[in-house]
Amino acid sequence: NAGVTQTPKFRVLKTGQSMTLLCAQDMNHEYMYWYRQDPGMGLRLIHYSVGEGTTAKGEVPDGYNVSRLKKQNFLLGLESAAPSQTSVYFCASSYSRRGRMSTDTQYFGPGTRLTVL
Amino acid sequence: DAKTTQPNSMESNEEEPVHLPCNHSTISGTDYIHWYRQLPSQGPEYVIHGLTSNVNNRMASLAIAEDRKSSTLILHRATLRDAAVYYCILRGGYGGSQGNLIFGKGTKLSVKP
Image (cartoon, rainbow over all chains, first blue to last red; front, side, top):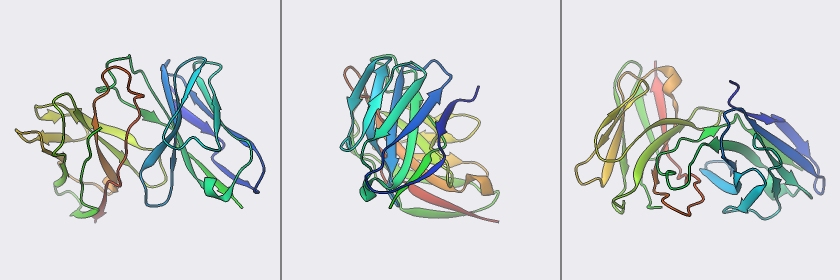
């Protein structure tokens, strides 16, 4: 099992450009998450999905869109990148049966380091 | 989710035990205590979790105070590979929660050879 994979690993964008980050998991997990991590900070939730075809906003959703067309994939889009979106982006997934989230384990990808000039 | 407090940093010598403390005085009766760690330039990884009783796994042990207001992650023999930021996270999540982990700043553990 590859676990959670993310592409690309690194990317440099100019202000106003768009891009899509891809997250894939092969563990048949229901829940998937996108977090961002800024220097010296913990991770913050951008968007999440509780199943195929469903998405919801997290703590810091502005400037991002997401889609979950297939259960194994969760895409994070930046329509018009801004320097404030320079960060490291982590995807995570978990099995998370509703009502049992207090004990579930989240599996994280290796991250995508994005720089917006 | 209730808040946790951890020291910003700790140092350890290789092959010695390490005790990483976490205070969570506002923990509720249904909150589980989870620990994750983040190695340099990697995503976080799960370490251990518990509710009331002490827990052991191949990576670490978790000691939970009787009043549950604090806990300690124990690495029995630190290795250089254990140098990471360790996050103590409380998780409730019964019904309706979005299920994300709420990360603080964690404790940065340095291991000296």
